Amino acid sequence: MYSTGIKLSPLDWDKRKDRAKVKGEKAIQLNEINKYLDNLTQSIIGYGSVRYNAKTLGREDLKSHIRRTEIDERKNEEDKLEKESDFFSLWKKLIETSKNSSGQNVTSGTKRSKTQTLNLIKKYCIDRKLKMTFEDIDMEFYYDFDLYMQNKSLNANSRGRNFKEIKAIIREALDRDIPVNMAFQKKSFKVIRTATDSIYLNEREIKHLIQLKLSPPLERQRDVFVMACFVGARHSDWHQIRAANISTEKEKNILMIDPKKTGEIYHLPIHPVVRFMLNKYQGNPPKVISNQKFNEALKQICRKAELGKIIINGESVEKWTLISTHCARRSFATNAYLSKSLDVYQIMKCTGHKTEASFLVYLKLNGKDYAMQAADAEFFNNKSWTGLSIAS
Image (cartoon, rainbow, N blue to C red; front, side, top):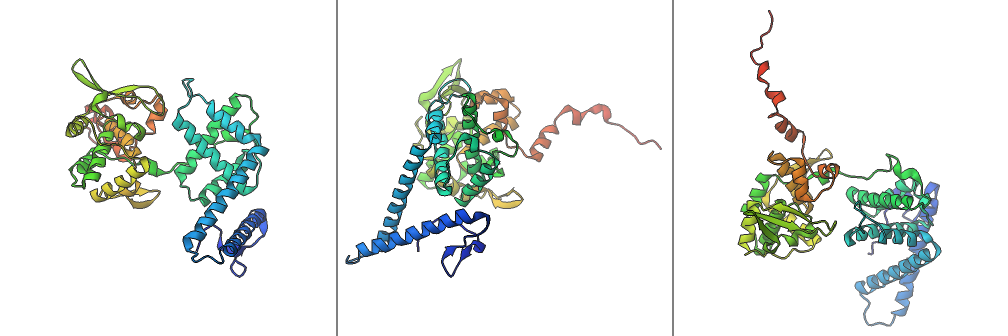
């Protein structure tokens, strides 16, 4: 068995012929799928003929051949597409010369994210047999590209990130007087987000994590994550949480972070938990592993912590399944705000946010959190309203 990764409705599939039914509005797309399957079949038959006299022909031999064939075909299609279209070379140029809000060149991480979106659109154009310009990015493209990403098993937040990069690059093109389709400004051309982006750990849950008995490797990752919950830095900057980056100003310990994403240095005080963890490792905490591996470790840790369930999009799911490295940054912002000891602008200075709007996205408060905060307000504790009586 070999999965092509193509998903079709059972109504579009002819089981007898083992091919898609070429009909209706999707006829062109379904015909391309059949061509792909025909070429794949011929490639396999050809490979079998070449290896006919081989002593062994294992399953992995055949899979490796198919993967090589697909990669070669894809590369040829991409090269052909780039030669025939200025669209992709122009997009690349915009990425390389993009500026941030401060007028500085965007960081390598931002370029990488934009390039990932460009590569996905390139694959989309190859699969759909399309030649595009910025003027072709309309609502029809939006819905079809979203469907394409869903068929690639991209979740809502991943699809939203790609639309965010598309809107950003179109704005960049517009600023340079490149003709674009203005559909990107419509409300319906939206950046998709889901509630999974709202997960954070409260202080009680973080204390519970600290008390967990774990294997040495998981203990080290737990300690790094817990420190990050009281620093608020991105995963790419966690390696900077160490004694060497702490200075003393007027008897106060200050940590300096030079963020990889923005490149604008910010400072924040040292929380007692951070101080405790740094002392545990003599100022040099464990090495920060890759984001993917750290997320895998976090899920093991949080599953052991039994954090309970949370309602997401009307469904009850285990909270540990949604925990990721970015939860540390959200937890810092939310817990600092709930402490009532810092105002929004003080917290923003600690996280490096420039605008209140971008910061408020990180505050993950539910209705009960807001009600608990409002309960202390003078409005709900006005003594002048006490002693009321009902007229008889």
